Length: 331
Image (cartoon, rainbow, N blue to C red; front, side, top):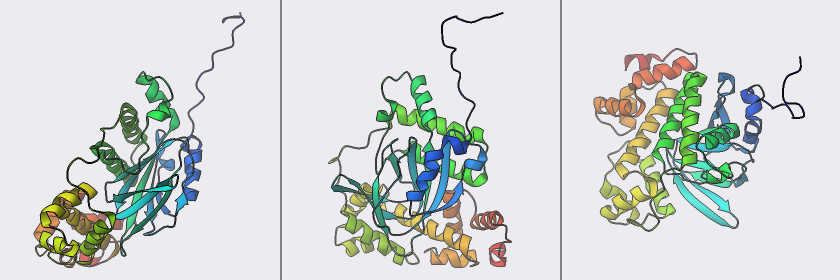
């Protein structure tokens, strides 16, 4: 018996679901253009909506051009502070990156980039590629018409707390080898949010003027060099030759953080590095990061990372397959 509509082409169904390697083939190859070293990759975890990779980045680069991909790339700064520049035509655009900063490259776009950090920085980033299939399906579900890729942001610096929070969650998921259900749910939320439209940034010219990039770099360098000391707003103002009231407002406009919060973030980054890479006692690390009270240091560290300094050290030692140093167990 012959059934079906005679004279019509059979309706094509969706092909079997691709493997992550097939779905993200171009994005996987795109890392060849990066000056960075890959640490982790999600391909073996079975995530289909998103490809996530962490990188150790150099502190300084000459200009380079990223590779083109049909996926949306979202980059989250995990560790380090630095000035980054992107060229559009003949003009360079600059932004100051810190942990939590986000940059976005729209599908099929490329970026010409260069950056430079202060000496001694540890730069790490999380690259998240949202698949073109996921974005197209999400656009259809939203009832959008027209080319969906044109509605996605393309920005050297995207000020969106939801995207930052989602990136932090995906970074943890990658480290913990989370199941696809969790990662793909975050990917779906990100795709919907970015297609529906992130909250627009504050219009230029509103509020206090931002510090110039050179002044911001000088302040950050000063913070790095004096992490073990008591650093006051008066010290920073004197170092930049501006009033502390102007510094307080303009530094926040330039970086998204008050000077105090920025300093605390740097201290926590340094503490995490020392806990991961050395056997120094926690008391010694707290003093190296400017804390005279080990209790205050531990409370601040827990608020930032969700665990105590000792548990943080044990976790990273466990991930590396080695035993925790005796100093870490005593702290």
